[in-house]
Amino acid sequence: MKKIILFLIISFFCQCQQRYNYTVNQENINPHLTELQKKLDIKGNFINIFFEDYFDNEKVSMKCDSKEIFSKNITTDNTINLADYYSQKSTCEKLQINIGPQKIILEKKDIENHKYLYIRKKSDSLNLTLSNTPKTYY
Image (cartoon, rainbow, N blue to C red; front, side):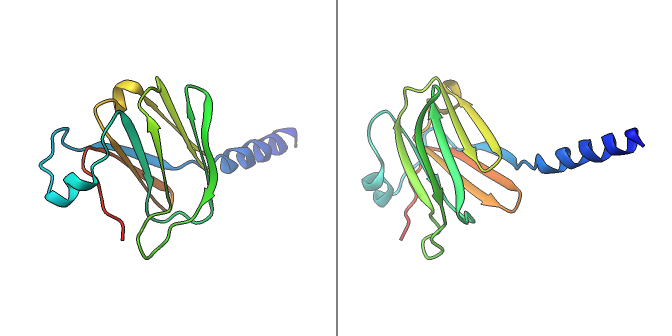
C-alpha cells in the first residue's frame, strides 16, 4: 500500500513539471537588408527581444546576470502578431528568460553577434531565432 501511495505522489509531481520544448535558430550574421530594414535597424550594442505569436496572458520575466530586467504578463496582439518587446544592452554574461515554467539561458557568446531575438510560442514549444534582420510589425 505504501508503494502505491508513493508511486501516485511521484507521478503527480512529475506531471506538474510541464515544460516547453524549445529550439534556438541562428540566421545569417551579415544579412542583406532592404532599404526599409536599413531604416528600422537599431544601432548600438543591444539585444532586442520580441515576443511574437501565441502568448495568452503568459508570465514572462528576464534576468541579466541574476538582476531582473523584465517581468510582466503578455498577450499577443493578433493584428500585428506581437505581444511585447524589450531592448537590453548586450553586456549580459548570462541572459535568463522565463516563460511560464520554462527557463531559457543564453550565454553572451550565444547572443553577442546578433541584434534581435524573436521568440514564438506554439502550444508546448518555443522557437527562438537570433537574427540581425529587423522585422516590421504593423
